[in-house]
Amino acid sequence: MGQPEQHAEGAGPFTTRLTWQRAEGETVVWESRLARRRGVLSVRGPGDAAGRPSTAGPTALRRLRRLNAIASSAFVIGGALFAAGAAISQFGSGDPLLSASVYFAGGLFFNTGGYVSLLQVLNAPRHAPGGGALVTAGWRWWGYEPMRLDWLSTFVLFVGTLVFGVNLLDSFLRGLSVQQVNRLVWTPDMIGCALFLVSGHLAFAEICHRSLPCLRSRSLGWWVVAVNQLGSVLFMVSALAAFTRPSTGSLVNTGIANWGTLTGAVCFSFGGVLQLFERP
Image (cartoon, rainbow, N blue to C red):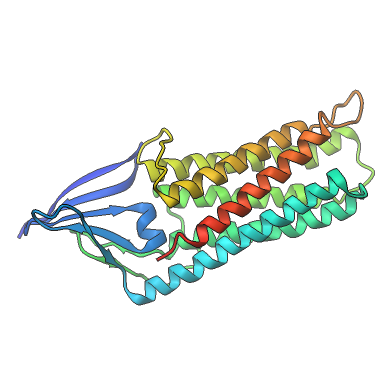
């Protein structure tokens, strides 16, 4: 018996959806996000109007549920803490040490969410060659798979959370000149925001199977990506407004910087809530 015919879709060199035509007439569809988030393939028999889900084994499903719960909870808590830090800056006593401490605690949760998101990719069930069922490999704490779009998206996200960590640590420093503030605090903030935006774009490419974003309002995964990307845009607006003018030593716009962080953080927290339901 020969190999089944395959049809690949994706963005650029990345494959995000594969369709097999088995010799017995069945059609099998693997989608990157559905397989790694929910552990399912779609199988449609000859003459069937719709496909039926083919799920991974119980070990894989338990793993997916556990990782999803940790990642989504980390983003919910991290977003809530970032929103609280921005609220303290905007409405509180104005104590920079207090707001920096709350931001730093939120950053640790973002670090956790970013790394566990990467673990979700590394330890998700993979499709077997030849159109077979999903197969679960042994546990991995790390892996390098740059030709997988889901790996690249979550890796960029994780690096972004680490760069934000540099920004949050440097925000505790006192007695800095304007140039030092912009170099040590503002620049890592901008880089982290840019990485979040790139990660979100790659996530859209994975779920849309093309380079340009799409609208899939009936897809929970699409809403998770869209809400998080909105949060990334708001973080970038906040970062742009947080640049310290060398001539005056003041921020471009303190209110926009605080409100951008607060609303962006709420988006990430809400995205984490939505992600709780994107599980097997």
